[in-house]
Image 1 (cartoon, helix red, strand yellow):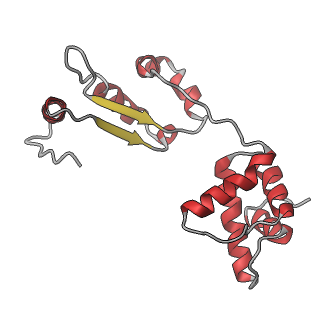
Image 2 (image 1 turned 135 degrees about the vertical axis):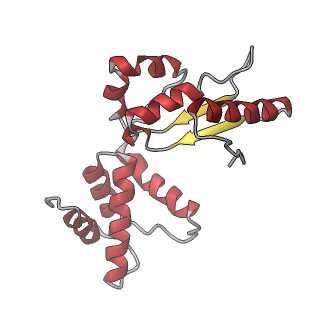
Amino acid sequence: ELGIQFAGERHSTMIRAVQEVLIERYAAGRQVVVLIDEAHAMPRESLEEIRLLSNLETGKRKLLQLVLFAQPEIEPLLERDDMRQLKDRITHHFTLLPLASTDVGDYLMFRLRAAGYRGVPLFSRAAVWALSRASRGLTRRINVLADKALLATFASGQYRVGLRQVWAARRDLGEAVW
């Protein structure tokens, strides 16, 4: 997206080209930020490249801000000896805790509104309770289960997600239902 044309295949040439573009952006008062999702699934070699990119700087400032989004599985990876230098460069680290069961309904409505929905709540209280229990408050699990429950609701010709649709969503994931 930076429009960099690489003149060669050599690693040092590519890094130099990236650095030149970043210096131009910095001189123009612009900051480049790279958002990397699913960092926990990246090969060690790719994480090493991220570390090398984090070295690009002027005398006073970093030229590139790197933001990694990852699941907790990244923690043991960063504890490895060969990942110490990358871990040392992480300046901010945030862990999102599971949602409280009382917040799951609000979270579902937030997600629906972000998608453009403006109607009444689609999830019954029983469905919200069941989603909260089945997901243990983990937003990724809430999203997967809620999506499957919405599909089950649509497939049954109903409008509001109930307990049966959450059960169907869990069964679809191969989980036992109470």
